[in-house]
Image (cartoon, rainbow over all chains, first blue to last red; front, side, top):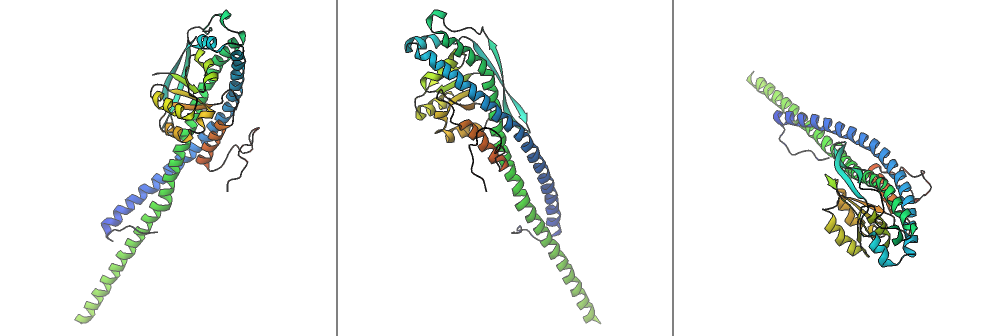
Length: 206
Length: 116
């Protein structure tokens, strides 16, 4: 490991010692952060996967149901029927912090009746089911969006954090330690040299 | 703040969500989907995207992972799920932890290969 390019003086030694102490403390903190993030990540990722399986199953059912409705209705009538939303869905979007990371938090509030956007005679009853199923699925879908985004962001953050921890552990700290050892050696070497010089001078005087 | 939701997909299957209060955008191919996403990314907080379109756009979608919003979520289309969403979760777990923690956990063993 290359040592830093500094003058071997007491000043530098003092500075480097302070830097090493900071680096070690930072390393410990980051490592703890990483551990905690990983713990939360595993919990969230499991929830994410379970939720996704559930939602995907239901969604395929909803869309299948809708396909049936579509297949018995002329295209233009279906388009006209679905063009206007029946229920205005408000998504209250905010951010919440997970380990200092801003992740989305979405709350749904349904306003307006959960009625249908069309009159019953316009379209087949299959469509009614699919619309109400879709509306019922929406909260879960939004919850999945929220969790999955958080999981993805957390994964990125863990990766970045790991890189920081490794940089400290394998580059920064060894470098500082080596430089400190080098300066110590150099200083004691100088000290010995000075001592010998004095002894020699003393010997010549007598 | 109040967010809006959108769904981007190929014509048919997304109409039903329009009735549920989600704005629907039709995109027949990935290029069109990319243009639409660019346009609506600022206005919508939650965007659902069908898997057929999300798969070729995976690299493009990565840029949305930086900020909390917008949330782009791949969902299966009417033709059924092809496992993209699950892959993404597994991928994220592998990236973060170095291992696939769901290896023996679930009905589908999608990533059977071992990681040395």
